[in-house]
Length: 334
Image (cartoon, rainbow, N blue to C red; front, side, top):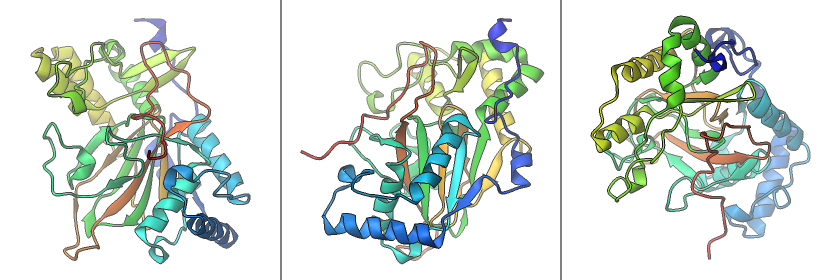
């Protein structure tokens, strides 16, 4: 076995869910003064008629809140890999106003990137009545359970606008803890995970180049820093498209990774309430969601806003592990 795999990861982002679940120091609430500052920034941006890409630190000034967001950025980039902000009264605002607040806060954490080829800047995570598993359907457009995975950016943020009638709980797990557990229990699985897999290119699935030409590693390492990228559905779709079934050892390795992520001792569950914001490092965390049932009344459906961000302090990645910026930096409409 290569020395790459030998040492256990002991950084703060290699945490155990059961240990964090026993305390709440990973949650930070907005104070009344901070909420008043956010309100002033929102109303000033509205008065100027600003569009989302025009909202930045200069046009959405938050001198008091900025210190809290800077602590969150450090925690996400160099600490435990995630942060949760609570206490924003989303019910007092329209969905559009809450979206501008979320965007404005995000400007202090990184640079927003587009989430699909259509140029979507602020994602709307809700059930559109689409069928999970179809090649042209993204899981967040359904009410289905979403297995643990990472997104195509440095950092993903969710703001809860409305909760489901039942279900829809969010879960996160440290990918670095999963690496430690695989190293301890089944070190033979690390080689295929480091070698990686061909991914379906979802938006190009019906084109002449539907699959990544190179293997995308699940784990990569540079200078002792381990990172993760993982979407099993795209791996399996890529193998099917190529007509090249995964090897038995590869399937076992992926099954082990999924089983460990589902271990209630390892992952951390949270029910996001309206106004709560969850922020995760996509190279050190995997995230999941349980299936859910919506309220029957129109306008009451479960609704999350989503940001994809490029961090200002970018993580060092190995050469075969290219950094992702969604579908490009946010830009003003022409």
